[in-house]
Amino acid sequence: MNFEYLETERLKLRKLTDELYELILTTKSDQEIMDLLCIDASDVEKEKQKAVRGFGMFNKSMLLFQLIEKESNNVIGWCGYHTWFTQHHRAELGYMLYTDEVKQKGYMKEALEPIIEYGFNNMSLNRIEALIEPKNVPSLKLIKYFNFKEEGLLKNHYLKNGVYEDSLYFGLLAHEYHTKNNKTHLG
Image 1 (cartoon, rainbow, N blue to C red):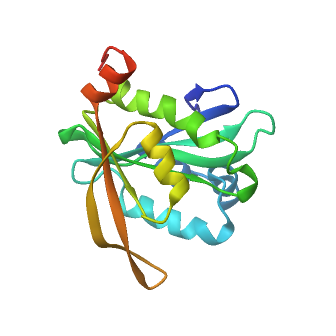
Image 2 (tube, one colour):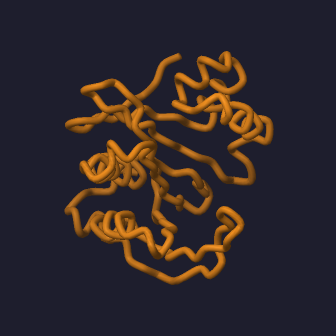
């Protein structure tokens, strides 16, 4: 199984497309799935059900990158586009670090720069969106660092542990990104 990578100073970003993710979930043993995706045994069946339902449905796809710390070769999190509306050239950005030990070390800032660039230049995105819980201060600071603009509040947007939570809605447009970063759109 061949993986594509992006690299930063401290990270290797392993690309997982819909097709590759589905291939892993349908052809690998449970142990191989746990090792490749860095998930627990309790999550294997849940992930397999996603493959049964299909990832690339209704003009919607995903493209995720696992964050692999170069020094330890451990998967420490993920980031990428978990909701990609290919026809509309827009995607929702998502990210997560798995443990507190790797938080507040600048890993996600380091990873998001090439991921955002990849979205605009390689996926031909016109718009990247981010939905953030209003109390998630680290995530709010991170998204604002990359010049995402707050566009609204979605009330009772997610049900988490039996409680409805709001989401702040952010967007970044390709022309704003390229103007700010003096970059040429290659898509």
